[in-house]
Amino acid sequence: MKFELHQDWSNLIALWPQVEEYQRLANKHGINDIFQDNGGKLLQVLLLLSLKVLPGREGNDAVDVTGTEFELKSVNVELTKSFSTHHHMNPTIIAKYRQVPWVFAIYSNITIRSVYLLMPDDLEVFYDKWERQWHERDGKDINNPKIPVKYVIEYGKLLWSNATPEELLWTPEIEEQIDLGGFEAEN
Image 1 (cartoon, rainbow, N blue to C red):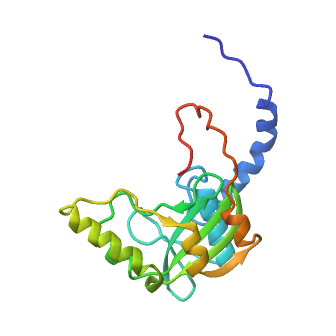
Image 2: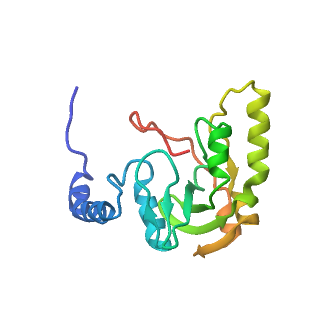
């Protein structure tokens, strides 16, 4: 074996103070790791919409100044065209989701492109479908059903954007993903 510093190591070291400053800002807003669970993207959405993070892994993600709680989702459209939901979708989770509006942030890699709001009624078509699937599977949880970006753009209320819907739905030629050294690409 042989280990040596990569030629870009000095570039990373030069950039690192700004990354640490980004983390300090995130800490002020309840995000302990900008690299974990889309923390860096979450911070952008929180600040853009003046939301506060709700602590803990269970429950909703954020709250506004009126006390309204939200579910927050983000997607990188360079990798996929649908939003992930929950790894153990079941009637209890669906009931929780039916109670709150959802904020969907669309990214091109790490650049935020637009943010949409969907109310619970806007997502009822998915809730009904997931409940039926859960019962058809004899009560077996559904693993991470998706919500298409196209649906969010068509039925959501645009809150913020620096891109057109056509840009967001454009599918680039994606070369085969190189080995990420044990890390997985964002889904």
